[in-house]
Image 1 (cartoon, helix red, strand yellow):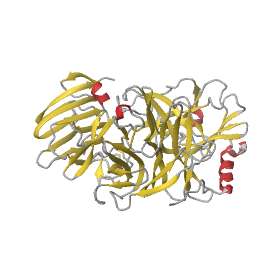
Image 2 (cartoon, helix red, strand yellow):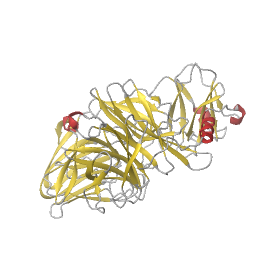
Image 3 (tube, rainbow, N blue to C red):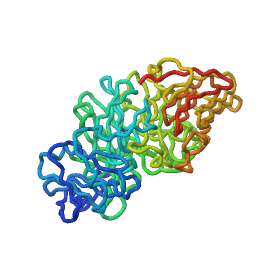
Image 4 (spheres, rainbow, N blue to C red):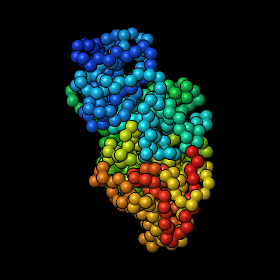
Length: 556
């Protein structure tokens, strides 16, 4: 047994980190780049130029540094605006904003705005999905901390409020009654003395929501420190109080992150699965604060083309499923979601497949960081994925926001040959969203294709842009070609053909189209494929050979 020390950081390191966070600020260091906000107006709108190098924006209250973020402040032009919420700082002393590493003559200082309008200068973007979850502004990647409670689905996510490229990791928060219409709940967790807020999970009990998450911060000695922390919410996830005893779990390993705790009724205790390099570690606890190392899984199993991340572990029927997201190493390059099926006794996960067997949850390019909702009703296993790929996520042709989540999916199991696989079907909430039948596809619709034998499906527009799909009944494969789908020039890794096994005969395909994405499913759950597309105008024409298409509006 390996006994984990509660904290491997030395006292001097903790003191240095704390000093960096709450230091007194010398105003002269900012030279002329000091902004004094007005007493009225909750939001200070920061002008962003995406091609600009990062500067530092600091919030200073009565000489004390209260917040610091890396922001691409506009130098020659303003691409869009992001909000600096002043409410937490107003009325607590003299408030100043210091902008460092940005030339004093930059246009950002002329274009700053302050008001109470949360929708100020919001861009109507052509590629913003109509029925997928997206942040209103800023960057989003991994879904985090998802749970269901009192009829509401809660989604937290990796979030940069200060630009639409990765950085400044917070937890954003959205909620939904139907997994289709999402309400922006703002920032749930913000960086602190331990660092930025990386991925993690939430668990629920009768009174509290407990979030467990990774913090990451550069050290004065080089490199960074990743540690596991917890926070508590007594108002259903709207606000969190961080545990004073953080961090609750540390190690000297690199890439030590993405905790997924869950209550295991079989052992009457909490389990935790955590990603560490290219393995998953399993722990147990009575209180979510003190953790005992149990075992590791991963050596020689599955794909090891990149770092293992964002794990999940849950029981379906009589088997346990371990989800392992990997970057890079996906079947068509970049990031993807693999999984393992086996048994778990509360101490050790045992995979039932041979070590070299690799199973992918989705065979598209744009399906990553898949995790499930905790406490989903009816014993369902509902998952969301980040709908992008680390090969080009920062370059996709959106501006004020970047990235969306996949549609919700329910997981099950099926057998094919000697193996057990995950079945993946659109959640029943997507069936409830079906509206009127239409003659031609639109920018937001579901296409149901009944097939007999092999089938070819082509979506196209008047610009000659097209996506072709083919189900090969003899080879038992489904493929999607997006090489001529529209704008594919922003990354050499984007134009591609993806192909999936169907593990038997397909009788019906369900294809979800939403402005910049196509998600295709075998209706029985044996195949899923998710790909982004960026057509110059919507695909409004469909041709089907070897099947019959029925098109439904998606009510939104």
